[in-house]
Amino acid sequence: MVQPDSAASREQVIDTMVGLTRLSTFHRAIAAGGDSMELYLGLRRRGFIRVATTTTCRIPKAQHAVGLIMGQTTLRAIEAALAQISKYLSASATIAILIDSRESGFCLKIRTRLEQLGFRIEAGVRCQQGLVLSAYRRGFGQMENAA
Image: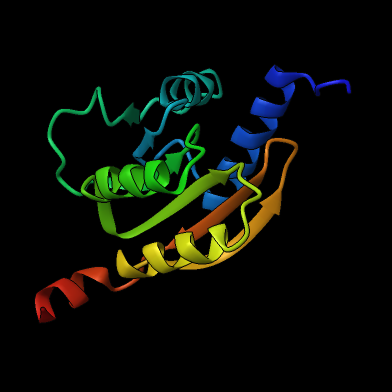
């Protein structure tokens, strides 16, 4: 079986994430996951200068408008990346996650975890590398204040 060109498919995933999150050069973005540095470099090449990774951004201050997760293959790894990245995201943030697992019920479990963090799934796009889910968080600050 012939494998698709990895670099081209990664570029497709990054383009899809940018499109789904409506990322602009004015937004602060944070990348997480096993391929966060590759994602970071891909965004920098596209002109996004206000981007960081969870390892390069020292203090989580809920200042990023967009979160991107790429390179996690297991449910636990994605949940860990979500928990890690959520501290950096603002109350009205958007997130995109690459899911490359075909395990049954995997997306439902991720949806449940996203809802626990105050996100609501907006869209999903199939790419060569897997499924890119986009979710947004609206009014999460109000939910935190009420709790």
